[in-house]
Length: 389
Image (tube, rainbow, N blue to C red; front, side, top):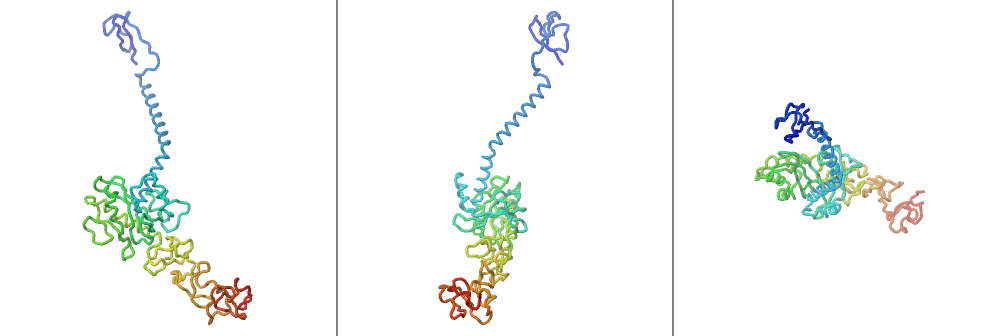
């Protein structure tokens, strides 16, 4: 390692491996030379350089970790707001202030669930917490109202564009027949071309378009601009053929997966046997107030408790097992057992008894009267009516 020396004759300092015979600057002999002893750390040494670099790396890493941790809650909140904003856009709510997003989301989103590929509800999981990358293994579904108050299902989708991933939220009618709204976004599509899928002019084209084709498969897609020939075909972005194609494939593949998971869309009059997996309608008596996505709103027997009677599940009259007369399907007792029938001793050739209305004209001389129920509470207190004990 080089040493430092000073010359008393010229006053200069120089470095050398050992004491020189003379000053290399002024030529003075060794009597004028003196070794300069270093005090403290040698800042010119390799050890100092390595230690300094290590300390700075650790310090900077600690500061970055601290800042990231301090800002994480705010970052997560912003990500959640952005996701809610995209879902609301598919429901026709756009240009809303950040401060109002959460309240509007809670107003329009009524219920959520997460479905497995085999159509089972995954208990304990929130649809909002499902990452876009998980779609396909899990299927988040949002039951909502549009900005106009229409019932809707919001289906999150994922796909592939030209340069990276694309995703979207499509709001459809509960029977998956018509698009009510759509929102799309991307990771890295070309500005001014593929990136235009995130703009409202492109997305607004989907509103009112049919989803399903006559073959029961998803027909909604995106085609090259100017080549659309059917209502379910939407014009793509000019100059962004591959991105537009990616959106079309995402719609067809993604929505078809949801249709399969939700039990399918059956032709009118045909009962859907996966009713417990579908959306509710206010006039249905099915278990958990859920019905399948049949066009006529008919219930699937899996949730209807109607003795597997498809006709009964369509909420029409079905034969009463007791009196062999038509009676309405009752959720509590199922098809073929209506209130007021019970174990009637005369099963054939009698009129179907009806519910007692007044309690005073149920029985006449111990004979079952069709104006009231036989032997049931409310039958004027006479439990011996029709021979029942």
